[in-house]
Image 1 (cartoon, helix red, strand yellow):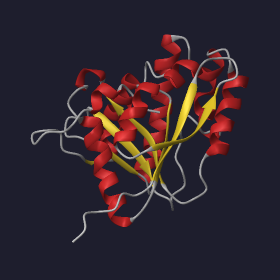
Image 2 (cartoon, helix red, strand yellow):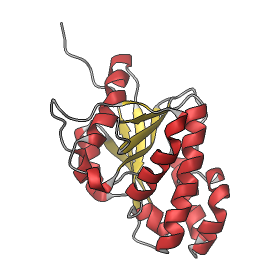
Image 3 (cartoon, one colour):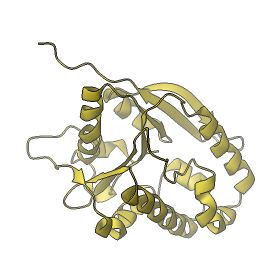
Image 4 (spheres, helix red, strand yellow):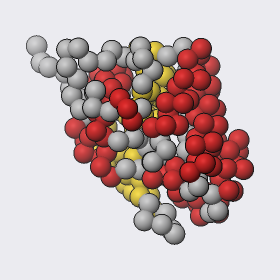
Length: 218
């Protein structure tokens, strides 16, 4: 699940520099991600009313970030906190994800207010069953503030981890709920390995896998 691919264009010499986030930055990152995902198809499906959606996203990202920052996961951002990439290593317990059934308990009231809890939970269960069993790094969330799109923040945050995964020979996995973002992820080496579809809505999630890229010879 990711936000508008227009925020992911190439990074120049003066582009944003990625760094690991710290717990004190959690409130700012919650707001950035809630704003970034306000028009995300999966978020709109789970929380159709706009007011409910923003509240539910804030609660959800607060939970997700807390677990990652306190555990073995990695949260990458920039100095101005205009984007974030949330990664889970193979050996870590996965954090809350909008695709995780158990993670939705803290936002259940918002999910119920969305009006389709049963079919929504069925979709999330399908996505969970499709997750690869091979050890991999999981990109749980990638988002950029809409006002910062076009600055290369998304690409920068991705490459901060992908370059290391290539060096270590490790794969990565993600789910994208925006079709227009699929080509962007493909440019970074991800390939579609499956789809998950809602039973009562055109919503589709593209399941994407990235094998490590070999480094230059010599």
